[in-house]
Length: 356
Image (cartoon, rainbow, N blue to C red; front, side):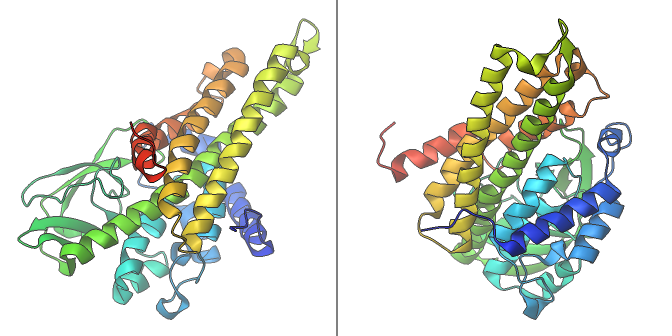
C-alpha cells in the first residue's frame, strides 16, 4: 500500500524550497513577466538548481544528480505551483529528464544535473502518453513548453523506423516564443531542427517519450494541488480580515459553506496527487490508473479553487495587484497541459472497465 504521508526528508526539502522562493521570488516578479517576458527567473533557478540541487533531483548520483525520486519531486512541485514559480523544473528536470532516464542517457543527464543546462521535449504541451505524433522533418511544433531558453532539445522525429529520438543543441533549431495565458511557463514554436544525436529508435524511442510524458503528468497533479492549496489558504486568510456589514465576511454562513466544500476538494486532490507520485516512485502497475485519476481530478480542482478565490476576494480579486490572477492563469494552463481532464477520463474508462 502506497504511503501518502510526507517523510522527514520530504519535509526538509519543502522547507528548503520555501526558503529559496521567499528570498528570490515575489508575486510582482511573476506579474512583471507579462510586460517583460523571460524564459525563467534566473536568480530563483540558480538557487533551486545550484544551492538545493533540484535540477538533478531525479538523476542518479552516478550521473552527478541528487538521487531523489518522484515523491520528492512531487513535494517540490507543490511549492512551485503555489508560488507560480517561473522555473523549468517540470519541463526539464522532470519531463525531459525522465525521457533520458528511461534511456539511461548518461552523458545528457550529466549535463542537466548541475542545472547549468536545461532540456525540453519538443511536442505540443497538450501531448500525453500514448497520444502523440512524431514530428515530421521540415515541420514546426507548437506550443512547446520549456523550449525557450533551453540548451538541449529532445525531438521525436518521424523516420522509416517509426520514430527516431534526436538530442539536438537548441542553437541548431529555431525557437520562437509565443504569447501564452501563463507567461510564468512560456510556450514556443520550434522548427528547423538539426540532425543532432539519435538516442533511440522505434519502440524504444516511443517507450521513452511515453515514460517521460506519464511521469510529468503524474507529477503535474502535485503542482495543481499546490495551486489549489494556495488559493484556498489565501482566501481563508482574506475572508478573516475583509469587513462587510461590520463583520468579517468569513463569518457568513454562505462563505463558510463554499470554503468547506473547497477544502474537501483540495484535500482529495492532495490524496490523488500523493498516490500518483507514490506509485510512480514504486514503479507500481497501478500507475496508468493513478495518473489518469489525478490528472483528470486535480486539473479541475485547481481551476475551481482559483475561480473561488477570485470571487471571494470580491472586487480585489479582479485586480492586477492581487496575485490571484496569476494562480488562475497557471491553473487554467495546467488544465490544458499534458492532456485535458476529459482525455484523461477517456483513458481511465477502459482501465477500470467502464464503457463509454
